[in-house]
Amino acid sequence: MKRIMHARIAEPGCRKPFLKAVKLLGIAAVCLVFLFPVLWILSVSVRSEKAVFETALAVKEWHFENYAAAWKTFGFSSMFLNSLVVTAASIAATLVISALAGYAFAKLRYRGSDAVYIVLLTGIMIPQAGILIPFFFLTKEMGLYNTLAAVVIACVAFGIPLSVMLFRGFFAGLPNEILEAARVDGCREAGIFFRICLPLCKPAVATTVIMLFVTNWNDYLMPLVLLRSEQKFTLPLGIARYVGQWNSPWNLIAAGVVICAVPITVVYLAFQSQFVKGLTAGAVKG
Image 1 (cartoon, rainbow, N blue to C red):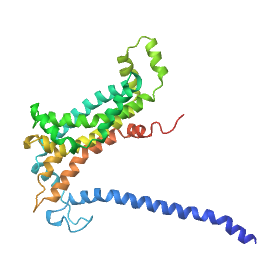
Image 2: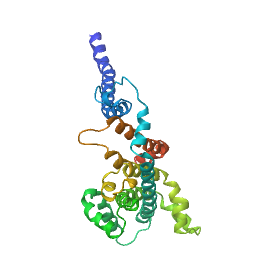
Image 3: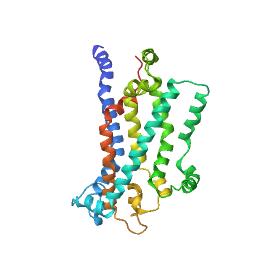
């Protein structure tokens, strides 16, 4: 009888290592599914043109010269600069507009502010393809067609709704007592925003920068419609022109994709700690 009792007591404890092993195997399988495309691109980028489709991940001969060849073949010097200008300018403009708008919607309440905020958020639901034609004619009428300024304006227009939502959420979480104390001390609204609110919202800034950088750096549709000269092509658009119907240098294209992913990785690592705080902010109330 005692043995049966001991066996029943020990049975739940025996299940824990088994369940833990199953969970770890499941996590490993999911990670492998997500990492496989990355590993495949990395392996293809160092293969010869003939060995591109020979194996899935194994590499027989390493050709690191593909990166230099891709940089020279695709003309990365000008395209890299164009992408950097478009991304940096659009992020700077979006941050300024979104931070000010988010502060206004969160702390400067006025009649109809909620309605204006809801109308602004509808921009999140509008896809790029839905306004391509009117935006194309608008840029031609303004004389901005085939300029990087047109791409910057498009990126800012699509980045503002989500960015305003993020900043409004962070500013709304700041205690009003701090702002009132600053007003009593004679601080103006501009001083409250730049000296108090903005430094406290570094996680929001980091989260917005990473999201905008990934979106604008990888944008393909808007540059495709708004740019005509190859000298003004961005990286995604420049690489795509080498994908042919009958033949494509897939090893060089893969190397170009890896080069394009380096700035995104650097930006994420630079803002990683603040980005994690931005994602978890408001999850736990003290």
